[in-house]
Length: 353
Image 1: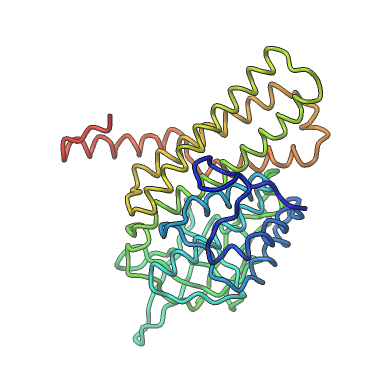
Image 2: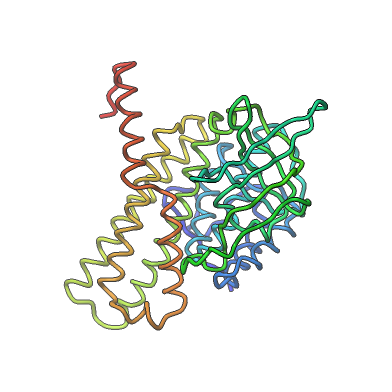
């Protein structure tokens, strides 16, 4: 079944036009796999492994289409979007580092840090690197073939490419009890003398131009999840003539999504011009995370407990979006944005407004 695309409203062509990019031939099959996903990433991972074209890369003129595609996946199934986004991100990172991409592989990106979990990378006299320690929040580590993993070195944090079926890798998923993304475990992985290849110098991963762009791309997935919640809200409203409250909830949700689409569209344009920096990305992520929270609240108030208790797809989408959007850290991320605003003003006298 053809899946309805998400459009940000400012792209050329009709609402159902397909993006004119080299990677699009793989797009419909991935969307179809997302429609069959039902919270299980296996179908989507198989579609990614079968794709023969290079995954899409943001910041090269088609970022709007890429983010619309991620949002379309999120509107269908957030587990699908959560599986595809890091695969695309890995392709962009490898390209930025001048590394080749090989079809037939599935990738993740593991750069989170956690208390009590440290991953160290050391090199021998021949320049061969190996990883030892624990890396937290490794989504799908037991189901994908490769990952880009950040580790601590004597020179600072550095990114490494790892083949995940190597000896010495132990995936820990037993403590993943989340009701959201229930079949997409993000547990810790233990590494014991695992060979790895460096990608970029120490510090490069966080300092590269594409870091902010990738962070904003994740927000496109969240936005798609909110679209899915809105579609359920709209269908629920159509079951009976909406009263004033139902109309108000529907109108507020539509207004929030329209604003989010404009924010993402503007940010995609900045990315294609090489002008999407950390401050812009923080604004995008914060805006989309906040609207997701409010759309979830509106849905709960407008439809009551019934769909959460009896509608499998809706209940799963609500749970999935609730945990996925927690990649945004709320007031802490706003505090980081506030520090950037203050530092920019203190150093250059710049005022954002």
